[in-house]
Length: 283
Image (cartoon, rainbow, N blue to C red):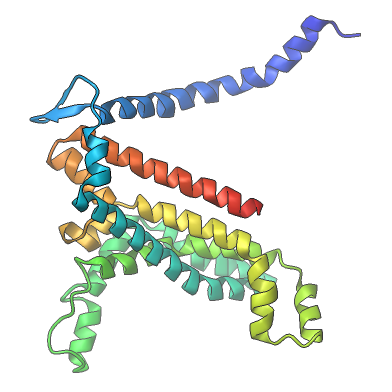
């Protein structure tokens, strides 16, 4: 019969094994986050963080009209990118799920291949394609469809196009996982009972793919909310985007408390989105 001391020692083993990871998380995540929280409630004067506790940073971010516009434009852009990823990613994911097993590895590689290229490189590629001297404008001018180059960069249109391409693989992979888990016998039963392709999609395929759809949408939406390279290169200073505003406040205006407060609000929004995903997935 084991003694109480032995039982206590056995129960402590898992915590001892987790201790290095917990210490690492504390040093790299908890402490910096606590420091950011404190800085977000400080004031700034000529680039210097002043002592004291103020709510001005959060009040201005939540009430000033320009800051409200900043949040609205960021959320609408992330939503547009998410919807485009769903519309473009669902057919590709369905094709991968229905493809013969010997071809799936190649299709997975083709979908994931863009992720092997740095985001900066891919974004600059879109700048060359969509720019005033880019491939799209040169082709349209050469075909006589337009008289002057279209403004496809330096605005939200270019940002949405680039963001969709950057985050589309995440949506495709999430949807493919759900579609692969659908029992083919359900589709065959629906076909036997007279359900056409459209009805079978909306009554069988789409409901069973909802977990992957929710996971992919939340992932794309949250990644697009915090994206920095794509908005900075394809949108530039002509657009209002949270990540660009954080960069401007911190490294151009040297207003670190306001930049930190904006980052904290963005983090809270992302946490709320993940909490919503958990609730929807459970339901």
